[in-house]
Length: 302
Ligand code: CP
Image (cartoon, rainbow, N blue to C red):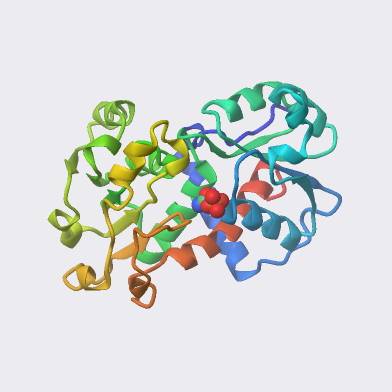
């Protein structure tokens, strides 16, 4: 049987996405299940991570599985010059599924073409972060009761933010109204605008957050991705572009939730954390349930 990978969110149909969200709901009710007995999952992180790696490892542990891997390429033989291909072909011999984060766009797709076990993309450069999208969709459905016909406001680094790229593609299945708020240097790339154009979906680009905040069902804040800038001066120019403060939420919709894939630097003031509209830490918790769902779905255990 051919491997089922998760490389881009567009690899999965709406039905498959709903299946994973429904499984995640079951795992939220009952997170400790011995479904991964005798299974080994490899977590290969060529880039830093807190939430993605640890929520995967928590998900695997709660399912009774084992994990192996590295948290830094410098502790692997990549530091001696080993290629991604050789690394994947080796680790595939030791595991039943590989979760991989890598700084190069397209690296996860490349890994899936040489691996004999399924590959799950845990973020490839500025390209895609589909498991984050699953937990974002889960969080949106849980807080809004639906994924349909929502007004989603994406804020910050829309050029390099891979979570934005994946989520906007997923939300294209649900008749979303898009507002993109960014500095002009970090606007949403043309390929994603073209994607929405082809789907006949409307979007607006803005410079100011207060122009659109009141109509949003979801405000999706993002960090300015310092590690992706080739020119440090460009980062300095944009790093404080948006700071969401508690008083800015006063006239927002009752149902509105603030999401953020995290980590946060300074784009959400800590005084927002106590606001009932702040959802980002629960959003990160939802990553455990959705990653349990993704693993068991891909391995055909659910
Ligand atoms: N959201 C996210 O990918 O966080 P980490 O970089 O901590 O994994």
